[in-house]
Every structure is written in C-alpha cells, then in structure tokens.
Image 1 (tube, rainbow, N blue to C red):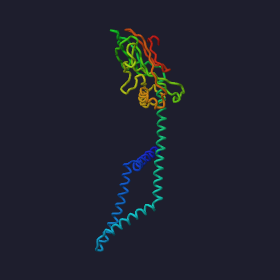
Image 2 (image 1 turned 180 degrees about the vertical axis):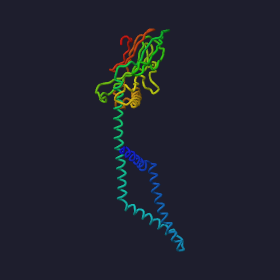
Image 3 (image 1 turned 120 degrees about the vertical axis):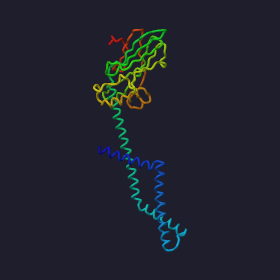
Image 4 (image 1 turned 30 degrees about the horizontal axis):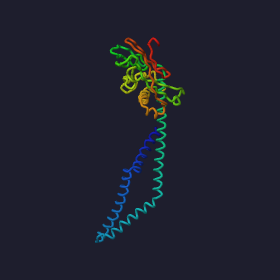
Length: 300
C-alpha cells in the first residue's frame, strides 16, 4: 500500500517535471516564469531608486535608470552563479526522479504484461476440453437451396443460448472455422493447445468468401460456448476470466492482435462439411485437440 502511494506521488511529480521541461508548452511556461522574475526584480530596483530620487527632490534620469537596470541584472546573474551548485543539484535530482519513475513504469508494464499473459493462459486452459458448440439441422430443400437451423450451446450447459435459421444454395454444407494455435511456451502445462471456432457457413455452390456469418457470439463478442459458470472456472477468478475472455475473442479474430499479444503462435482456417437433406441433424463439437468435428448425434 505504501509502495503504491509512493509510486503515485512519484509518477505525478515526474509527469509535472516532464511537462515543464520537455514539452513546448512547459518550456514556454518555464521561460515565462523566469522572465517574469527577472522583470519584477529589475522593476523593483528601478522603482526603489526612483522613490529615493523623489525623496531627494529630483527625478530619476534615463542614464541613471539604465545603470540601475544593469546593476539589478548583474545582481541576479551573480545570485544565479552563486547558487550554481544548488541549481545543479536540483537539476540532477530532477533527472534522477525522471529516471527512477521511468524505470518503475517499465517494471510495472512488464509485470502487468506478465499478469495479462498468465490470465490469458488460464482462460485458454479452461477452454482446453471437448465441448459441444452447435447443432445443425436441415429443415427443407427447395429450388436447390437448403434451409438450415443452427442451435448454439452455452459453455458448460446443455441449454441452447441462441438459434439461427439461414438458407443457402447447395447440399454439401461446410462450416468454416478459425483455429488458433497458442504458443505452448506460454502455457504452464507445456503442451500445445489449439482452439477452433466456426464462424460461417458456405457450400458446394456458395464460395467460402461469400459464406453466411454465424450468430454464435453474445453482445460482447464472445462465443456462447466459451462462457463458463463460475463454479467451473479454475486458475483465475470469474471476473478476470470474463474480462480476459473478451480480449481473447478479439485476438482470435484479428491477425495483427494475435501476432502482438505474445500468446498466439498462428491463426489458420479449417472447415468440416456434410451433405444434408431435410431431416438430417448433426452435432458440432470442438475436440480437446482443437479440431472441429461434425457427426450424427448417435456418433457420440
């Protein structure tokens, strides 16, 4: 607690010092303060001499006024020269404060990143199991188009979290998936972990790039199947799990984010397919190995 309070004060002081000495606005403000101090000191000197002249029954002349100005400037410069060691010590102290603050901030960033990777790894380990993600059912076929119903399951639950109906040309139905290959050096167990996530449907007549997006994400962009009841989460608190799960979902959909996060080794596509006729029902599972499997429910 005391250490955090100290860092808060140190960072605030360092920010103010950096603003004052390393930004155009700060330098202008500092120059204004120093300039104002010079002008005020000279003005006071000239004013005192002018009052003394008035008391003596005469006016301060231009020559004498100029002399007083230069005398005051010389006095100020003399004071600065005399205070040189003190000013140097203050400057070195400011540099030291900035250095310490910068070092502590870098340490905090490293520690925060280490904690983040550890929490993301814990989320991945919670997802490293076999689970049912969806049920795929052919409702009808007309004019070469197949009408499908998809039911998406919530993680750790037999309940359907959401359903979606769609219609697509063709009979050979493909589920296109993203497979995220995690860097097992970051996984405490030391084993390789892949997670597969289906995200669109295409067919033998509809190109992959023209496929239909699946609605298997909740309002926060997290796959329903990735959510877990608090009692089934291990190695990380439920709130941290949900927070990092949302981050992980972004990572799995963004190639740039996946390369920068320090946890994902690669992203690649994978697809499974079945020829479907009205009445056919298939269950889609994600295997613990990270593969996507689609089979008749009786196959399980």
